[in-house]
Length: 74
Image (cartoon, rainbow, N blue to C red):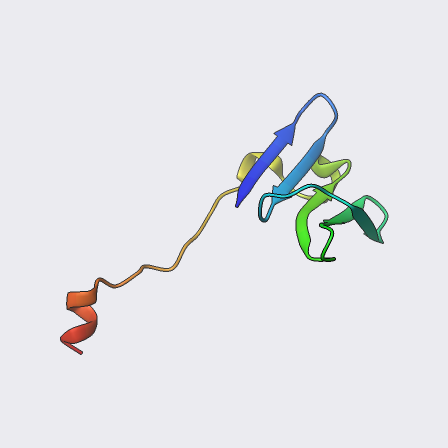
């Protein structure tokens, strides 16, 4: 997943997977889901993103992934 932000246009894009948008669905004002040709979501676009979230606080939190050895010991 990629997160892209354009301060010039105040648009935040969450790219879920690669692909070419073939269609889109407006979830609410300023929130658009772009779909590929299989109608799968490939990106989420937030217009006027700074009004919806604090751009400076965007971060990524992933759960820790245990190694195979750790899993074998449990």
